[in-house]
Image 1: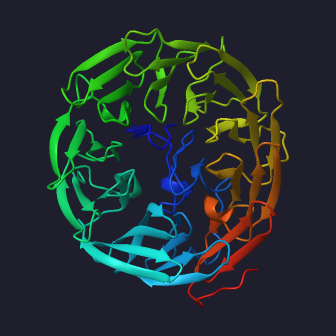
Image 2: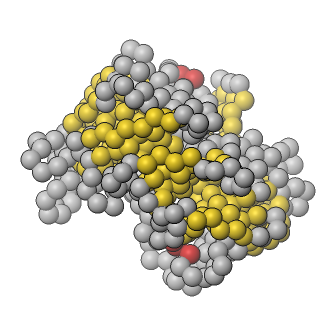
Length: 530
């Protein structure tokens, strides 16, 4: 799905999704990126996606005796460190992946949702929501230690973050998908805007539309856009942030808002809207509210933007349709796949490579498209990955894709993944796994990836360190269930966070493949690796 600056906002009651940063369904945290099958996002030096959690096959077993889940939330990554919050102790653990030194910082009451802020040199910053005291703490880490710089009020029930590209602004909001049994009249319309631009940092509460689903900023950091059921709430940022408009995204804004898929261009001028079952692409001018419709000739089943917002990628019928943005005056490029049913697309951030697939029905076939910068020259092929596809992701350098899948009947394996090169005359590599693949994260240069497997029924857990250029992988067994993966590029380390009552993270050196596991973050300031 959309990556980094190509803001993808999905309102889908039946969408398959997970918390940000590759966290599992039962761990709501911001680790190394963004979520949902076929989706990717970039934060703190890596991108990640999850294909789900839990065991495979058979009837549902009884839960194991005294299963203990970690108090720590899934970690986040800044430029140099891995951060993890413990709501029970009120502490934040900050880990150096290279030295394995663990430092602790006191936050507020029940710190829960961490988010990374853009780092500067050797200094990293993070924000955490303290759910027990309805406030947020700004933390700073460098070689000298970890400090809590300030605490600001936040609205009750905040459980999610959105951060502007440069880190001046952060917005705390309430994601209803992370809640159980929410009353249908509860709109969760309160958000808290935090200005971090100076020593006079402050927070201010605002009200947006009913049940926000996601928040993004424009590249200039002058506005934020909140997709809600009634439409797009626009927040003007400045000396006094305020909600300036509610832009309707469809002709009838109250007609099944869950079926809308919305992308906002990085400059904040346009919203592209797909409605499930419709062949018409909506183009909404955010400033004027004017809406135009463009018929793509077949039901649009997926929609994405390039990172710079210059092109849109739509799956219409059995074709990938690539349109300039704004989509006027130039005919779209099309890549057809005949009778193949491919309904979702995962483009690279620059749009030069894309993979298409479908997980709406059992299929092992994936389409790959590589194009020149102007899309005048296009190569494509269909490959069989020998597994039932659940999701696919492209690497940040647009040279490879990783496809996750479940194995078909008759296989002795519990899952599989495939490495698909963008170079059309190269073979793909298929790897069977003893547990279903669940989590993926790429290094920002696209050279490496880490993939975690998890089967709670068989108690089988592990991670693959992948070197993409050579299509090589190495397996690292894990002793507990993985809940998040990521890569700290500055330290050349991959990590896998796991369920454990005292916290557990395994770090793997990207070059030597040496693995070290930390358990018990709060036992000492420095914890020896296993």
